[in-house]
Image (cartoon, rainbow, N blue to C red; front, side, top):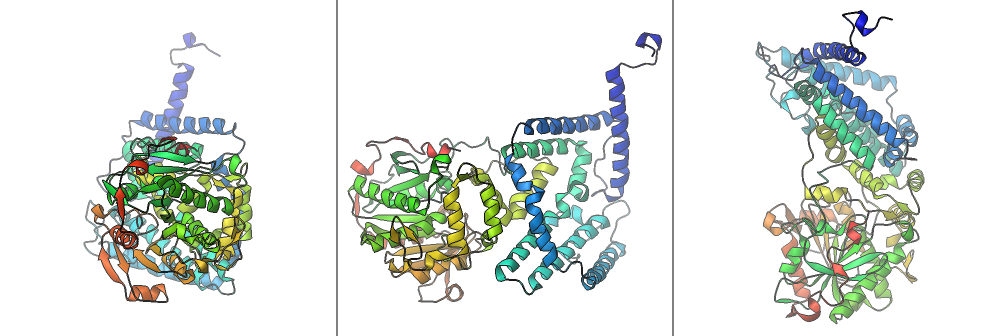
Length: 634
Protein backbone atom coordinates (compact mmCIF):
# COMPACT_ATOMS: atom_id res chain seq x y z
CA UNK A 1 0.00 0.00 0.00
CA UNK A 2 1.58 3.32 -0.99
CA UNK A 3 2.30 5.82 1.76
CA UNK A 4 1.22 9.46 1.79
CA UNK A 5 4.69 10.36 0.60
CA UNK A 6 4.42 8.00 -2.35
CA UNK A 7 1.42 9.66 -3.97
CA UNK A 8 0.50 13.27 -4.35
CA UNK A 9 -3.26 12.53 -4.38
CA UNK A 10 -3.59 10.60 -1.14
CA UNK A 11 -5.49 12.21 1.75
CA UNK A 12 -4.96 11.78 5.50
CA UNK A 13 -7.36 9.13 6.88
CA UNK A 14 -9.51 11.69 8.74
CA UNK A 15 -9.74 13.90 5.67
CA UNK A 16 -10.82 10.90 3.62
CA UNK A 17 -13.47 10.04 6.19
CA UNK A 18 -14.67 13.63 6.11
CA UNK A 19 -14.96 13.49 2.33
CA UNK A 20 -16.99 10.30 2.56
CA UNK A 21 -19.37 11.89 5.05
CA UNK A 22 -19.67 15.00 2.91
CA UNK A 23 -20.47 12.93 -0.17
CA UNK A 24 -22.98 10.87 1.80
CA UNK A 25 -24.81 13.88 3.18
CA UNK A 26 -24.62 15.67 -0.17
CA UNK A 27 -26.47 12.78 -1.77
CA UNK A 28 -28.98 12.62 1.09
CA UNK A 29 -29.53 16.38 0.92
CA UNK A 30 -30.09 16.30 -2.82
CA UNK A 31 -32.57 13.45 -2.38
CA UNK A 32 -34.39 15.33 0.36
CA UNK A 33 -34.55 18.46 -1.78
CA UNK A 34 -35.92 16.48 -4.70
CA UNK A 35 -38.51 14.84 -2.47
CA UNK A 36 -39.54 17.99 -0.63
CA UNK A 37 -39.37 20.52 -3.46
CA UNK A 38 -42.88 19.83 -4.84
CA UNK A 39 -44.32 20.09 -1.35
CA UNK A 40 -42.44 23.06 0.11
CA UNK A 41 -44.97 24.98 2.22
CA UNK A 42 -44.15 28.31 0.59
CA UNK A 43 -42.43 29.30 -2.59
CA UNK A 44 -40.11 31.54 -0.63
CA UNK A 45 -39.05 28.83 1.84
CA UNK A 46 -35.31 28.89 2.26
CA UNK A 47 -33.75 25.70 0.92
CA UNK A 48 -30.30 24.62 2.06
CA UNK A 49 -27.31 25.87 0.13
CA UNK A 50 -26.26 22.95 -2.12
CA UNK A 51 -22.64 23.81 -1.47
CA UNK A 52 -22.97 23.76 2.32
CA UNK A 53 -23.03 19.99 2.77
CA UNK A 54 -20.53 20.14 5.60
CA UNK A 55 -23.15 21.77 7.82
CA UNK A 56 -25.55 18.91 7.12
CA UNK A 57 -22.78 16.42 7.82
CA UNK A 58 -22.10 18.09 11.15
CA UNK A 59 -25.79 17.93 12.06
CA UNK A 60 -25.88 14.25 11.21
CA UNK A 61 -22.72 13.57 13.19
CA UNK A 62 -24.13 15.39 16.22
CA UNK A 63 -27.29 13.33 16.06
CA UNK A 64 -25.34 10.10 15.80
CA UNK A 65 -23.03 10.99 18.69
CA UNK A 66 -25.86 12.06 20.98
CA UNK A 67 -27.73 8.83 20.32
CA UNK A 68 -24.68 6.60 20.85
CA UNK A 69 -23.77 8.43 24.05
CA UNK A 70 -27.33 8.05 25.30
CA UNK A 71 -27.38 4.31 24.57
CA UNK A 72 -24.06 3.90 26.37
CA UNK A 73 -25.43 5.68 29.43
CA UNK A 74 -28.63 3.66 29.46
CA UNK A 75 -26.83 0.33 29.48
CA UNK A 76 -25.79 1.13 33.05
CA UNK A 77 -29.44 1.55 34.11
CA UNK A 78 -31.28 -1.67 35.00
CA UNK A 79 -34.63 -0.51 33.62
CA UNK A 80 -35.00 3.19 32.86
CA UNK A 81 -38.31 4.79 33.86
CA UNK A 82 -39.13 5.74 30.28
CA UNK A 83 -38.64 2.16 29.07
CA UNK A 84 -41.40 0.88 31.33
CA UNK A 85 -43.88 3.26 29.72
CA UNK A 86 -42.95 2.67 26.08
CA UNK A 87 -42.32 -1.07 26.37
CA UNK A 88 -44.25 -2.57 23.47
CA UNK A 89 -44.87 -5.76 25.41
CA UNK A 90 -46.96 -3.83 27.93
CA UNK A 91 -49.04 -2.03 25.30
CA UNK A 92 -49.45 -4.89 22.80
CA UNK A 93 -52.27 -6.71 24.66
CA UNK A 94 -54.31 -3.49 24.78
CA UNK A 95 -53.72 -2.88 21.08
CA UNK A 96 -54.66 -6.48 20.26
CA UNK A 97 -57.91 -6.11 22.21
CA UNK A 98 -58.63 -2.84 20.45
CA UNK A 99 -58.08 -4.35 17.00
CA UNK A 100 -60.32 -7.30 17.88
CA UNK A 101 -63.12 -5.00 19.02
CA UNK A 102 -63.02 -2.63 16.05
CA UNK A 103 -64.64 -3.64 12.73
CA UNK A 104 -61.76 -2.28 10.65
CA UNK A 105 -61.00 -5.56 8.87
CA UNK A 106 -64.55 -6.02 7.62
CA UNK A 107 -64.83 -5.74 3.83
CA UNK A 108 -67.89 -3.53 4.11
CA UNK A 109 -66.07 -1.10 6.38
CA UNK A 110 -63.04 -0.94 4.12
CA UNK A 111 -65.17 -0.36 1.04
CA UNK A 112 -67.03 2.46 2.73
CA UNK A 113 -63.78 4.08 3.86
CA UNK A 114 -62.35 3.82 0.37
CA UNK A 115 -65.42 5.39 -1.22
CA UNK A 116 -65.46 8.23 1.32
CA UNK A 117 -61.75 8.83 0.80
CA UNK A 118 -62.19 9.08 -2.97
CA UNK A 119 -65.00 11.58 -2.53
CA UNK A 120 -62.85 13.62 -0.15
CA UNK A 121 -59.84 13.60 -2.47
CA UNK A 122 -61.97 14.66 -5.46
CA UNK A 123 -63.41 17.54 -3.44
CA UNK A 124 -60.01 18.72 -2.23
CA UNK A 125 -58.39 18.42 -5.65
CA UNK A 126 -61.25 20.41 -7.20
CA UNK A 127 -60.48 23.25 -4.81
CA UNK A 128 -56.89 23.43 -6.02
CA UNK A 129 -57.84 22.94 -9.68
CA UNK A 130 -60.31 25.82 -9.65
CA UNK A 131 -59.32 28.90 -11.69
CA UNK A 132 -57.29 31.29 -9.58
CA UNK A 133 -56.75 28.79 -6.77
CA UNK A 134 -53.02 28.59 -7.36
CA UNK A 135 -50.87 31.55 -8.26
CA UNK A 136 -48.29 31.18 -10.97
CA UNK A 137 -45.31 31.17 -8.59
CA UNK A 138 -46.85 30.97 -5.15
CA UNK A 139 -48.79 28.75 -2.81
CA UNK A 140 -52.44 27.90 -3.12
CA UNK A 141 -54.93 30.52 -1.99
CA UNK A 142 -57.51 28.25 -0.39
CA UNK A 143 -59.61 29.73 2.38
CA UNK A 144 -59.45 27.95 5.77
CA UNK A 145 -63.17 27.17 5.69
CA UNK A 146 -63.08 25.84 2.14
CA UNK A 147 -61.69 22.45 3.15
CA UNK A 148 -64.25 19.88 4.33
CA UNK A 149 -62.73 19.38 7.79
CA UNK A 150 -61.03 21.73 10.21
CA UNK A 151 -58.94 21.08 13.30
CA UNK A 152 -56.77 23.48 15.29
CA UNK A 153 -53.77 21.18 14.90
CA UNK A 154 -53.79 22.09 11.20
CA UNK A 155 -54.69 25.77 11.49
CA UNK A 156 -51.35 27.01 10.14
CA UNK A 157 -51.75 28.13 6.47
CA UNK A 158 -48.91 25.84 5.41
CA UNK A 159 -51.21 22.85 5.86
CA UNK A 160 -53.34 24.09 2.95
CA UNK A 161 -50.82 25.92 0.77
CA UNK A 162 -49.97 22.75 -1.14
CA UNK A 163 -52.45 20.08 -2.29
CA UNK A 164 -50.29 17.28 -0.85
CA UNK A 165 -50.50 18.53 2.74
CA UNK A 166 -54.15 19.42 2.38
CA UNK A 167 -54.94 15.91 1.16
CA UNK A 168 -52.80 14.42 3.89
CA UNK A 169 -54.39 16.13 6.86
CA UNK A 170 -57.91 15.97 5.44
CA UNK A 171 -57.57 12.20 4.93
CA UNK A 172 -56.27 11.82 8.46
CA UNK A 173 -59.21 13.77 9.89
CA UNK A 174 -61.66 11.64 7.89
CA UNK A 175 -60.11 8.38 9.11
CA UNK A 176 -59.91 9.60 12.71
CA UNK A 177 -63.55 10.64 12.57
CA UNK A 178 -64.63 7.28 11.16
CA UNK A 179 -62.59 5.32 13.72
CA UNK A 180 -64.21 7.28 16.54
CA UNK A 181 -67.63 6.59 14.98
CA UNK A 182 -66.84 2.87 14.83
CA UNK A 183 -65.74 2.85 18.46
CA UNK A 184 -68.90 4.66 19.48
CA UNK A 185 -71.20 2.29 17.58
CA UNK A 186 -69.71 -1.01 18.77
CA UNK A 187 -72.32 -3.18 20.42
CA UNK A 188 -72.10 -6.14 22.76
CA UNK A 189 -69.43 -4.74 25.08
CA UNK A 190 -69.71 -4.00 28.77
CA UNK A 191 -69.91 -0.24 29.42
CA UNK A 192 -66.46 -0.18 31.03
CA UNK A 193 -64.90 -2.08 28.13
CA UNK A 194 -66.72 0.10 25.61
CA UNK A 195 -65.31 3.17 27.30
CA UNK A 196 -61.80 1.74 27.11
CA UNK A 197 -62.17 1.08 23.38
CA UNK A 198 -63.29 4.65 22.78
CA UNK A 199 -60.43 5.95 24.89
CA UNK A 200 -57.85 3.78 23.12
CA UNK A 201 -59.24 4.91 19.76
CA UNK A 202 -58.68 8.51 20.73
CA UNK A 203 -55.12 7.80 21.90
CA UNK A 204 -54.28 6.02 18.65
CA UNK A 205 -55.75 8.64 16.36
CA UNK A 206 -54.04 11.44 18.30
CA UNK A 207 -50.69 9.67 18.04
CA UNK A 208 -51.02 9.06 14.27
CA UNK A 209 -51.62 12.70 13.36
CA UNK A 210 -49.37 13.71 10.44
CA UNK A 211 -48.38 16.75 12.50
CA UNK A 212 -46.40 14.44 14.79
CA UNK A 213 -43.95 13.20 12.14
CA UNK A 214 -41.12 15.21 10.56
CA UNK A 215 -41.69 14.17 6.92
CA UNK A 216 -45.45 14.81 7.00
CA UNK A 217 -45.44 18.14 8.81
CA UNK A 218 -44.82 21.09 6.46
CA UNK A 219 -43.69 23.33 9.32
CA UNK A 220 -41.00 20.82 10.30
CA UNK A 221 -39.84 20.33 6.72
CA UNK A 222 -39.53 24.07 6.24
CA UNK A 223 -37.67 24.53 9.53
CA UNK A 224 -35.33 21.60 8.78
CA UNK A 225 -34.41 22.93 5.36
CA UNK A 226 -33.97 26.47 6.67
CA UNK A 227 -31.72 25.45 9.59
CA UNK A 228 -29.96 22.62 7.77
CA UNK A 229 -31.06 20.14 10.39
CA UNK A 230 -30.16 22.16 13.48
CA UNK A 231 -33.77 22.02 14.68
CA UNK A 232 -33.60 18.22 14.73
CA UNK A 233 -30.32 18.33 16.64
CA UNK A 234 -31.87 20.59 19.26
CA UNK A 235 -35.02 18.47 19.27
CA UNK A 236 -33.07 15.25 19.88
CA UNK A 237 -31.24 17.01 22.72
CA UNK A 238 -34.63 17.74 24.28
CA UNK A 239 -35.85 14.20 23.62
CA UNK A 240 -32.84 12.50 25.16
CA UNK A 241 -32.90 14.82 28.17
CA UNK A 242 -36.54 13.86 28.75
CA UNK A 243 -35.76 10.16 28.34
CA UNK A 244 -33.01 10.45 30.93
CA UNK A 245 -35.32 12.12 33.44
CA UNK A 246 -38.16 9.76 32.51
CA UNK A 247 -40.64 12.55 31.96
CA UNK A 248 -41.88 14.83 29.20
CA UNK A 249 -40.82 18.44 29.77
CA UNK A 250 -43.37 21.21 29.42
CA UNK A 251 -41.33 24.18 30.56
CA UNK A 252 -37.83 25.44 31.28
CA UNK A 253 -36.87 23.52 34.41
CA UNK A 254 -34.18 26.05 35.34
CA UNK A 255 -36.50 29.06 35.35
CA UNK A 256 -38.11 28.37 38.71
CA UNK A 257 -37.09 27.42 42.20
CA UNK A 258 -39.45 26.64 45.06
CA UNK A 259 -39.08 29.32 47.71
CA UNK A 260 -37.33 31.74 45.36
CA UNK A 261 -39.89 32.68 42.69
CA UNK A 262 -42.73 30.26 43.40
CA UNK A 263 -44.24 29.25 46.75
CA UNK A 264 -42.91 32.47 48.27
CA UNK A 265 -45.71 33.55 50.62
CA UNK A 266 -44.05 34.15 54.03
CA UNK A 267 -44.76 31.65 56.77
CA UNK A 268 -43.32 28.97 59.02
CA UNK A 269 -43.48 25.20 59.26
CA UNK A 270 -45.02 24.75 62.71
CA UNK A 271 -45.63 20.99 62.84
CA UNK A 272 -44.13 17.93 61.16
CA UNK A 273 -44.77 14.20 60.91
CA UNK A 274 -43.40 11.48 58.67
CA UNK A 275 -46.30 12.14 56.26
CA UNK A 276 -46.71 15.90 56.17
CA UNK A 277 -45.57 19.34 57.28
CA UNK A 278 -47.98 22.03 58.46
CA UNK A 279 -47.33 25.59 57.30
CA UNK A 280 -48.73 28.64 59.11
CA UNK A 281 -48.65 31.75 56.93
CA UNK A 282 -47.92 35.24 58.21
CA UNK A 283 -51.07 37.42 58.37
CA UNK A 284 -51.24 40.52 56.16
CA UNK A 285 -54.16 42.31 57.84
CA UNK A 286 -54.40 43.88 61.32
CA UNK A 287 -57.33 41.66 62.23
CA UNK A 288 -58.23 38.15 61.07
CA UNK A 289 -61.28 35.92 61.12
CA UNK A 290 -61.64 34.14 64.44
CA UNK A 291 -61.95 30.74 62.76
CA UNK A 292 -58.69 29.80 60.94
CA UNK A 293 -58.51 28.14 57.53
CA UNK A 294 -56.76 24.79 57.07
CA UNK A 295 -56.06 23.70 53.48
CA UNK A 296 -55.48 20.09 52.41
CA UNK A 297 -53.94 20.01 48.90
CA UNK A 298 -53.83 16.79 46.87
CA UNK A 299 -50.88 14.55 47.72
CA UNK A 300 -50.70 13.68 44.02
CA UNK A 301 -49.18 17.12 43.42
CA UNK A 302 -47.24 19.79 45.28
CA UNK A 303 -49.26 22.17 47.46
CA UNK A 304 -47.94 25.29 45.78
CA UNK A 305 -50.49 25.12 42.98
CA UNK A 306 -52.29 27.38 45.47
CA UNK A 307 -49.21 29.60 45.87
CA UNK A 308 -47.58 29.88 42.45
CA UNK A 309 -46.75 33.57 42.61
CA UNK A 310 -48.22 36.62 44.38
CA UNK A 311 -50.58 37.41 41.48
CA UNK A 312 -51.97 33.86 41.23
CA UNK A 313 -51.66 32.76 44.84
CA UNK A 314 -54.86 31.66 46.55
CA UNK A 315 -52.93 31.66 49.82
CA UNK A 316 -51.82 35.26 49.41
CA UNK A 317 -55.32 36.35 48.42
CA UNK A 318 -56.90 34.56 51.39
CA UNK A 319 -54.45 36.26 53.74
CA UNK A 320 -55.40 39.64 52.27
CA UNK A 321 -59.04 38.75 52.91
CA UNK A 322 -58.29 38.54 56.63
CA UNK A 323 -57.97 34.78 57.07
CA UNK A 324 -55.48 32.87 59.23
CA UNK A 325 -54.18 30.33 56.72
CA UNK A 326 -52.59 26.95 57.40
CA UNK A 327 -51.44 24.61 54.62
CA UNK A 328 -50.52 20.92 54.67
CA UNK A 329 -47.46 19.97 52.61
CA UNK A 330 -47.47 16.22 51.96
CA UNK A 331 -44.22 14.30 51.75
CA UNK A 332 -43.40 12.63 48.46
CA UNK A 333 -43.56 8.90 49.19
CA UNK A 334 -40.50 6.73 49.58
CA UNK A 335 -39.93 3.25 50.99
CA UNK A 336 -40.64 4.51 54.51
CA UNK A 337 -44.26 5.22 53.51
CA UNK A 338 -44.91 1.88 51.83
CA UNK A 339 -47.59 0.85 54.34
CA UNK A 340 -49.50 4.14 54.30
CA UNK A 341 -53.24 3.76 53.62
CA UNK A 342 -56.35 5.93 53.70
CA UNK A 343 -56.38 5.54 57.48
CA UNK A 344 -53.12 7.45 57.65
CA UNK A 345 -54.37 10.33 55.52
CA UNK A 346 -57.60 10.60 57.52
CA UNK A 347 -55.61 10.50 60.77
CA UNK A 348 -53.29 13.16 59.36
CA UNK A 349 -56.20 15.44 58.54
CA UNK A 350 -57.73 14.96 61.98
CA UNK A 351 -54.34 15.56 63.60
CA UNK A 352 -53.76 18.75 61.59
CA UNK A 353 -57.18 20.01 62.67
CA UNK A 354 -56.22 19.36 66.28
CA UNK A 355 -52.84 21.07 65.93
CA UNK A 356 -54.44 24.24 64.55
CA UNK A 357 -57.17 24.23 67.20
CA UNK A 358 -54.66 23.88 70.01
CA UNK A 359 -52.10 26.25 68.55
CA UNK A 360 -54.63 29.08 68.23
CA UNK A 361 -56.86 28.01 71.13
CA UNK A 362 -59.97 27.91 68.93
CA UNK A 363 -62.84 25.41 69.02
CA UNK A 364 -63.04 24.80 65.26
CA UNK A 365 -61.48 25.44 61.85
CA UNK A 366 -62.57 26.04 58.28
CA UNK A 367 -61.22 23.37 55.92
CA UNK A 368 -60.51 23.03 52.21
CA UNK A 369 -59.89 19.75 50.40
CA UNK A 370 -58.58 19.86 46.83
CA UNK A 371 -59.16 16.89 44.49
CA UNK A 372 -58.14 13.60 46.20
CA UNK A 373 -57.60 15.45 49.49
CA UNK A 374 -61.22 16.56 49.20
CA UNK A 375 -62.25 12.93 48.82
CA UNK A 376 -60.39 12.14 52.02
CA UNK A 377 -61.78 15.26 53.72
CA UNK A 378 -65.27 13.89 53.17
CA UNK A 379 -64.19 10.65 54.86
CA UNK A 380 -62.64 12.69 57.69
CA UNK A 381 -65.87 14.62 58.24
CA UNK A 382 -67.80 11.36 58.33
CA UNK A 383 -65.40 9.92 60.91
CA UNK A 384 -65.65 13.03 63.09
CA UNK A 385 -69.45 12.95 62.80
CA UNK A 386 -69.58 9.30 63.85
CA UNK A 387 -67.37 10.12 66.85
CA UNK A 388 -69.50 13.09 67.88
CA UNK A 389 -66.74 15.57 67.02
CA UNK A 390 -68.24 17.27 63.97
CA UNK A 391 -68.17 20.65 65.72
CA UNK A 392 -64.38 20.77 65.32
CA UNK A 393 -64.95 21.82 61.69
CA UNK A 394 -66.99 24.97 61.03
CA UNK A 395 -67.08 24.48 57.26
CA UNK A 396 -65.69 22.30 54.50
CA UNK A 397 -64.87 23.53 51.01
CA UNK A 398 -64.29 21.05 48.20
CA UNK A 399 -62.23 21.98 45.14
CA UNK A 400 -63.04 19.59 42.26
CA UNK A 401 -63.38 16.64 44.65
CA UNK A 402 -65.23 13.37 44.02
CA UNK A 403 -66.78 10.93 46.46
CA UNK A 404 -69.20 9.14 44.12
CA UNK A 405 -67.15 7.58 41.31
CA UNK A 406 -69.99 6.10 39.28
CA UNK A 407 -69.33 8.69 36.54
CA UNK A 408 -65.76 9.66 37.30
CA UNK A 409 -64.60 10.29 33.74
CA UNK A 410 -61.75 8.86 31.71
CA UNK A 411 -59.55 7.90 34.65
CA UNK A 412 -61.94 4.98 35.10
CA UNK A 413 -60.26 3.42 32.05
CA UNK A 414 -57.22 2.71 34.22
CA UNK A 415 -58.89 0.73 37.00
CA UNK A 416 -59.74 -2.69 35.59
CA UNK A 417 -57.81 -5.71 36.82
CA UNK A 418 -55.35 -5.66 33.93
CA UNK A 419 -54.53 -1.99 34.43
CA UNK A 420 -54.12 -2.43 38.17
CA UNK A 421 -51.71 -5.31 37.59
CA UNK A 422 -49.74 -3.15 35.18
CA UNK A 423 -49.57 -0.31 37.72
CA UNK A 424 -48.43 -2.78 40.35
CA UNK A 425 -45.58 -3.82 38.05
CA UNK A 426 -44.40 -0.19 38.04
CA UNK A 427 -44.04 -0.01 41.81
CA UNK A 428 -40.63 0.26 43.43
CA UNK A 429 -39.94 -0.29 47.16
CA UNK A 430 -43.59 0.21 48.05
CA UNK A 431 -44.20 3.47 46.21
CA UNK A 432 -45.29 4.51 42.74
CA UNK A 433 -43.04 6.95 40.91
CA UNK A 434 -45.01 10.15 40.33
CA UNK A 435 -43.78 10.31 36.74
CA UNK A 436 -46.06 7.43 35.81
CA UNK A 437 -49.08 9.24 37.18
CA UNK A 438 -48.03 12.41 35.37
CA UNK A 439 -47.89 10.45 32.11
CA UNK A 440 -51.41 9.15 32.78
CA UNK A 441 -52.79 12.65 33.26
CA UNK A 442 -50.95 13.79 30.13
CA UNK A 443 -52.70 11.07 28.13
CA UNK A 444 -56.07 12.52 29.11
CA UNK A 445 -55.15 15.65 27.17
CA UNK A 446 -52.74 14.24 24.62
CA UNK A 447 -52.84 17.00 21.97
CA UNK A 448 -52.17 19.72 24.57
CA UNK A 449 -49.85 17.96 27.01
CA UNK A 450 -47.97 15.48 24.79
CA UNK A 451 -48.08 16.03 21.04
CA UNK A 452 -47.89 19.81 21.18
CA UNK A 453 -44.53 19.46 22.93
CA UNK A 454 -43.35 16.67 20.65
CA UNK A 455 -43.89 18.98 17.68
CA UNK A 456 -42.58 22.21 19.14
CA UNK A 457 -39.66 20.93 21.22
CA UNK A 458 -38.63 17.67 19.54
CA UNK A 459 -39.32 18.36 15.86
CA UNK A 460 -39.12 22.14 15.53
CA UNK A 461 -36.37 22.37 18.14
CA UNK A 462 -37.92 25.30 19.97
CA UNK A 463 -36.86 26.19 23.50
CA UNK A 464 -39.20 25.60 26.40
CA UNK A 465 -41.25 28.50 27.76
CA UNK A 466 -40.86 29.69 31.35
CA UNK A 467 -44.33 28.98 32.75
CA UNK A 468 -44.86 28.48 36.48
CA UNK A 469 -48.04 26.41 36.11
CA UNK A 470 -46.30 23.96 33.79
CA UNK A 471 -43.34 23.79 36.14
CA UNK A 472 -45.70 22.77 38.94
CA UNK A 473 -47.37 20.25 36.64
CA UNK A 474 -44.01 18.56 36.07
CA UNK A 475 -42.96 18.65 39.73
CA UNK A 476 -44.16 15.11 40.36
CA UNK A 477 -44.90 13.49 43.71
CA UNK A 478 -44.47 9.78 44.50
CA UNK A 479 -47.44 7.92 45.96
CA UNK A 480 -47.63 5.13 48.54
CA UNK A 481 -48.33 2.15 46.29
CA UNK A 482 -50.59 0.30 48.71
CA UNK A 483 -52.86 3.30 49.19
CA UNK A 484 -52.85 4.16 45.48
CA UNK A 485 -54.02 0.66 44.54
CA UNK A 486 -56.73 0.75 47.20
CA UNK A 487 -57.83 4.19 46.06
CA UNK A 488 -58.27 3.00 42.48
CA UNK A 489 -59.93 -0.30 43.34
CA UNK A 490 -62.08 0.63 46.36
CA UNK A 491 -63.15 4.08 45.19
CA UNK A 492 -62.81 4.39 41.41
CA UNK A 493 -63.64 0.79 40.50
CA UNK A 494 -65.94 -0.39 43.29
CA UNK A 495 -67.32 3.02 44.41
CA UNK A 496 -67.43 1.94 48.05
CA UNK A 497 -67.05 5.38 49.64
CA UNK A 498 -70.72 6.19 49.04
CA UNK A 499 -71.91 2.87 50.47
CA UNK A 500 -72.61 3.47 54.18
CA UNK A 501 -70.09 1.67 56.39
CA UNK A 502 -68.51 -0.21 53.47
CA UNK A 503 -65.17 1.43 54.30
CA UNK A 504 -63.65 2.55 57.56
CA UNK A 505 -60.81 4.82 58.59
CA UNK A 506 -58.88 4.67 61.84
CA UNK A 507 -61.28 2.03 63.07
CA UNK A 508 -64.41 4.12 62.43
CA UNK A 509 -66.95 3.18 59.72
CA UNK A 510 -67.57 5.86 57.09
CA UNK A 511 -71.09 7.05 56.29
CA UNK A 512 -71.13 10.29 54.31
CA UNK A 513 -74.82 10.79 55.11
CA UNK A 514 -73.80 11.69 58.66
CA UNK A 515 -72.02 14.86 57.48
CA UNK A 516 -73.89 17.95 58.68
CA UNK A 517 -70.98 20.38 58.30
CA UNK A 518 -71.84 23.29 55.92
CA UNK A 519 -70.12 22.58 52.59
CA UNK A 520 -69.08 24.74 49.65
CA UNK A 521 -68.62 22.54 46.57
CA UNK A 522 -66.75 23.87 43.53
CA UNK A 523 -66.55 22.08 40.18
CA UNK A 524 -64.95 22.98 36.86
CA UNK A 525 -67.22 23.03 33.85
CA UNK A 526 -64.46 21.68 31.57
CA UNK A 527 -62.74 19.46 34.13
CA UNK A 528 -61.46 16.26 32.52
CA UNK A 529 -60.07 14.78 35.75
CA UNK A 530 -63.00 15.32 38.11
CA UNK A 531 -65.96 15.91 35.76
CA UNK A 532 -68.53 18.42 37.00
CA UNK A 533 -71.27 15.78 36.93
CA UNK A 534 -69.21 13.56 39.20
CA UNK A 535 -68.38 16.38 41.62
CA UNK A 536 -72.09 17.29 41.76
CA UNK A 537 -72.87 13.86 43.18
CA UNK A 538 -71.33 14.91 46.50
CA UNK A 539 -74.47 16.97 47.08
CA UNK A 540 -76.51 13.75 47.04
CA UNK A 541 -74.66 12.32 50.06
CA UNK A 542 -74.71 15.15 52.60
CA UNK A 543 -77.09 15.68 55.50
CA UNK A 544 -76.14 19.32 56.11
CA UNK A 545 -76.39 22.57 54.10
CA UNK A 546 -74.34 22.94 50.95
CA UNK A 547 -73.69 25.39 48.15
CA UNK A 548 -72.62 24.22 44.70
CA UNK A 549 -70.67 26.50 42.36
CA UNK A 550 -69.81 25.64 38.78
CA UNK A 551 -66.69 27.48 37.65
CA UNK A 552 -65.52 28.13 34.12
CA UNK A 553 -62.49 26.21 32.81
CA UNK A 554 -61.08 22.99 34.22
CA UNK A 555 -59.32 21.18 37.03
CA UNK A 556 -56.60 23.79 37.59
CA UNK A 557 -57.61 27.07 35.94
CA UNK A 558 -61.13 26.66 37.29
CA UNK A 559 -59.69 26.68 40.82
CA UNK A 560 -56.67 28.97 40.47
CA UNK A 561 -58.54 31.99 39.12
CA UNK A 562 -57.66 35.16 41.08
CA UNK A 563 -60.20 37.98 40.88
CA UNK A 564 -57.60 40.45 39.57
CA UNK A 565 -57.19 38.36 36.41
CA UNK A 566 -60.79 39.01 35.36
CA UNK A 567 -61.01 35.60 33.68
CA UNK A 568 -63.74 33.02 33.21
CA UNK A 569 -67.02 32.99 35.10
CA UNK A 570 -69.05 30.93 37.55
CA UNK A 571 -72.64 29.83 37.94
CA UNK A 572 -74.81 29.63 41.05
CA UNK A 573 -78.36 28.43 41.58
CA UNK A 574 -80.03 28.71 45.01
CA UNK A 575 -82.95 26.50 43.97
CA UNK A 576 -83.28 22.98 45.37
CA UNK A 577 -82.50 21.01 42.20
CA UNK A 578 -81.90 17.31 41.83
CA UNK A 579 -79.35 17.19 39.01
CA UNK A 580 -76.49 19.12 37.50
CA UNK A 581 -78.54 19.60 34.34
CA UNK A 582 -81.30 21.25 36.36
CA UNK A 583 -78.72 23.35 38.19
CA UNK A 584 -77.27 24.63 34.91
CA UNK A 585 -80.69 25.26 33.41
CA UNK A 586 -81.63 27.65 36.21
CA UNK A 587 -78.17 29.00 37.06
CA UNK A 588 -77.11 32.63 37.13
CA UNK A 589 -73.78 33.44 35.49
CA UNK A 590 -71.33 35.83 37.14
CA UNK A 591 -68.27 37.04 35.28
CA UNK A 592 -64.86 36.61 36.89
CA UNK A 593 -63.56 34.57 39.80
CA UNK A 594 -65.73 32.67 42.29
CA UNK A 595 -63.26 33.37 45.10
CA UNK A 596 -65.14 36.45 46.43
CA UNK A 597 -68.36 34.41 46.48
CA UNK A 598 -66.64 31.77 48.59
CA UNK A 599 -65.23 34.41 50.97
CA UNK A 600 -68.69 35.92 51.42
CA UNK A 601 -70.11 32.46 52.13
CA UNK A 602 -67.38 31.91 54.72
CA UNK A 603 -68.12 35.29 56.30
CA UNK A 604 -71.76 34.38 56.74
CA UNK A 605 -70.63 31.43 58.87
CA UNK A 606 -67.95 33.33 60.79
CA UNK A 607 -68.17 37.10 61.12
CA UNK A 608 -66.08 37.49 64.25
CA UNK A 609 -62.53 38.88 64.02
CA UNK A 610 -59.56 38.96 66.38
CA UNK A 611 -56.26 40.89 66.34
CA UNK A 612 -53.56 39.38 64.13
CA UNK A 613 -51.00 38.99 66.89
CA UNK A 614 -49.75 36.46 69.41
CA UNK A 615 -50.39 32.91 68.24
CA UNK A 616 -51.82 34.25 64.98
CA UNK A 617 -48.27 35.15 63.93
CA UNK A 618 -46.27 31.99 63.09
CA UNK A 619 -43.10 32.50 65.09
CA UNK A 620 -43.55 30.36 68.19
CA UNK A 621 -41.75 26.98 68.09
CA UNK A 622 -41.35 27.10 64.33
CA UNK A 623 -39.40 24.31 62.64
CA UNK A 624 -38.28 26.17 59.52
CA UNK A 625 -39.37 28.81 57.04
CA UNK A 626 -42.07 28.12 54.49
CA UNK A 627 -42.31 26.37 52.10
CA UNK A 628 -40.40 23.76 54.10
CA UNK A 629 -38.30 20.73 53.21
CA UNK A 630 -40.99 18.27 52.17
CA UNK A 631 -42.05 20.21 49.09
CA UNK A 632 -38.47 20.01 47.81
CA UNK A 633 -38.10 16.25 48.27
CA UNK A 634 -38.19 14.00 45.21
